[in-house]
Image 1 (cartoon, rainbow, N blue to C red):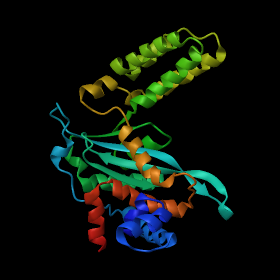
Image 2 (cartoon, one colour):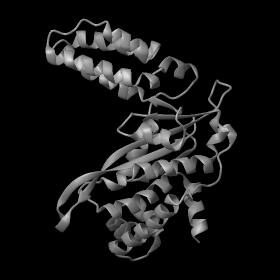
Image 3 (cartoon, rainbow, N blue to C red):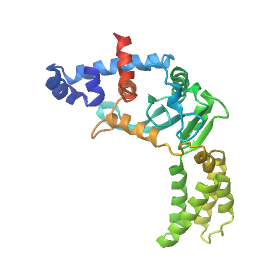
Length: 307
């Protein structure tokens, strides 16, 4: 109960309110913090050693894609910034905490993992995929926003030809940003250009979009022309993960919403008003928070083993 309270609320509220009200237990915030972080540290070390806490394998039927005969399992990987505290309570530069998610097509099954070390988290994802039985699915797909090093990490720990889908909304944001520069004062022209470009990408894919962009008249403004060049290069570099028509035909996800939501639910405990962390504190509490959001059965499985 102490760890659960510490995962859900600040240590002060956990001690002064939750535990006192619901359990009639009187503890200090420091004791609550120590209990939760020590437990989280043990959990983190256990999982870094390859012993991923789950409630057993998911069932083959969990990977069914509605309306299709094939099955699929999904991987997601993203990061969010944790506010850090420096010496003598001074504000320090934040650190990126990586959040991984393994999930089923209907989102009925989700498993979260976190770590400040990207490569270490990739190894945990690989082990979790084995433990959860993702090999039962006909296809394993990663859906990400193509952040720095993320695709390389996933491929390194799974396989070289793993399909990594570029999040549709992230791709469309690049088009929107360019449209604002191309037509900074004409909203109608901006929306018309954007709608056409998004339509090409959505209906025909990244390769067709590259051809469409190369066929555009070069802007007179040199700065805008440079942005067009950058936009073309961006989609050239990601053409292998933007075949959206094929993905949609297969019934696959093209949005990274689940892992972005995962960053929010894990980050909610670490990014509340006025909170700053030393790295060890965040590194130890975050895995326990991720365990909680992986489901009641996973949380209970951990404590059954711990007992």
